[in-house]
Image (tube, rainbow, N blue to C red):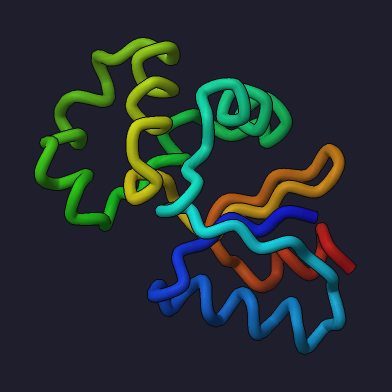
Length: 116
């Protein structure tokens, strides 16, 4: 299982604590050091069944700086993948990838149902 996170993010810290408490093994990847590639994002998006805009960190400074709230509705999927791949801080975190499961953000009930 792969966990993409930002070490300073409190939600990511909670998620890691939850995984450790539940003895769930994972490989951690710092999203700012090795941000997702377009190909990975496409694959994860497809597996998740979620709208692509859910992969954006809408509360992040970068999201706000770029005015993405207004731009996303007119962007194509290809443009969104390309943009997400440019900066890990644009990507919603934590992100869990396990087999055919992709979890975006930390929602304990959702994680319980999917990972236990």
